[in-house]
Length: 487
Image (cartoon, rainbow, N blue to C red; front, side, top):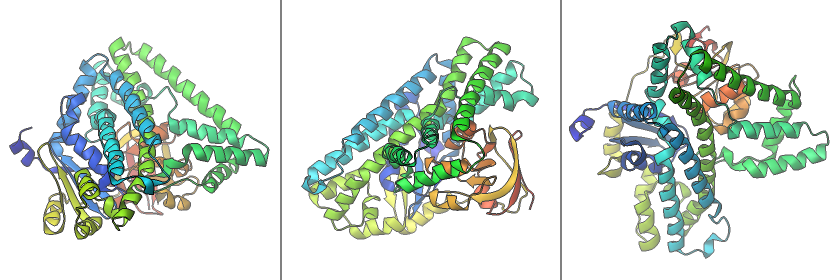
């Protein structure tokens, strides 16, 4: 799109994120506008983000984001091996980011020079942006306009699948046939639950913590403690099924899903090219979690660096978290920074980027830009619709769960409602009779986990947390994608 078209392209909400800062999110946003076309052929024309404290909303041009998604789907459908190449490179660049992050020092940071701190900061920034040129592709292909989902369903209709079977067949054919890292982590915890000796179990739980402690870091703070895993395991052990039976059932369900997928491909006589697309689509869900774990680890490791930078210039860490890389460089190497500007940003600011411009706004200019994104939501409705991520039916009480601290209100059989789920709330997801999210795409975290747990799930409702509230009784029909408010 040219500049005039972008100017007339209204903003559409891409994601709302409860815990986000400029330090991290300028990485993807800058990449989207400047580097994303390297491996897709088309970057986003513009990105706008609004920070109110750590609460973030970010926006793309509505038409622009549709065209970016359409371009990627065209390549997936028409270019042999492109989907496989995406998954391969997600693993490659996730490993590169994790490998670098392991080397980020966590102790004796006071012995590093300002130049050394900048070198670490800058290197991580570059590697992380490079990571996004591949890792965002499945998200861009489906999350905002269901481009990939719609194209796959169109193909199924063209080969004779009726509307009564469309959702069922779509879910079967896009089902992952491999275990995600969340699946693996949860099974490792279940295996610890099969150990009879309390002393040995505690030793294994500590080992488990050392392996996965960072996965609670969403996106500015968090770390799992031993007591968190003890509580998770206690919740499992208090259930009706033994850990061994749960593991056996999960493995069997995965095998059954793989066999159903293979059988349906044969029944529908799907050609080799589309078979590859369906298997790579399933792998998008597996690599999504793989890259997310690498990314969370990177952010956890960089937290110590940001705190050291803040300490040297008598700033609070949050001020450093609202600086752009050139500003961090100027502060570290030339002692130039505006403390008051940074303090204002921590309260509210707007970040804008396109291929030619990058800027942070505060005050009246920020307010003017925020007004461009405002939308009205009708909260007096009795029915919501979204995309089916995992089919099924459930009825229960709504519990709004955004972050780990919200999980204490979640009871077995409740309906978990969230903006978007993340690894830190998986224990609550396991208790849910159904899951509802505002954001989505079939490769979203909620879709992946709900399929692995076989829990009915509807994603992409856009307004669920604005319309529903704790205690509401709802009926979730995750066969048709409809949520009805009963009381």
